[in-house]
Length: 134
Image 1: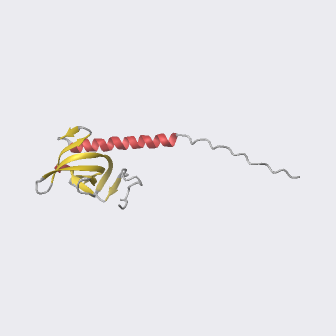
Image 2: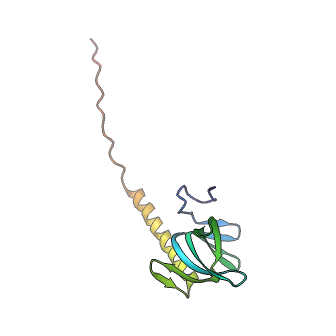
Image 3: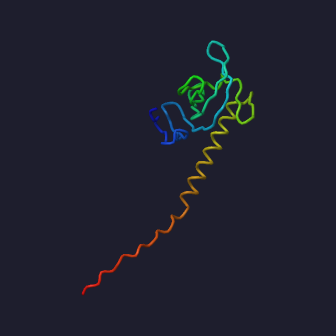
């Protein structure tokens, strides 16, 4: 699969970015969603989330649809239920997704800061044999 703009080598982490009029937030997790399509048909999907896209008039949950294969964008206003780790959310789904994306952003920032402040391990000193002139 081709690497999307702003995506790291790790496919589960997308850097926060702007994509035209869209603001794209990194979002990780596997969700089971009940989704209503444009025709009003409901289906249950298992999605490995990659990003939350906030744009003009709509917000999309982007990720890999395990049942149908490939990357898909799901309008958050059409998600009727979201389940993750035994928790079921039926109201305030967009607010929950935004809060999760923000929590994950803060965790990644804290990890980067912690890595940056660590001192590198001391290099072992290698003794080279001395050449003695005769």
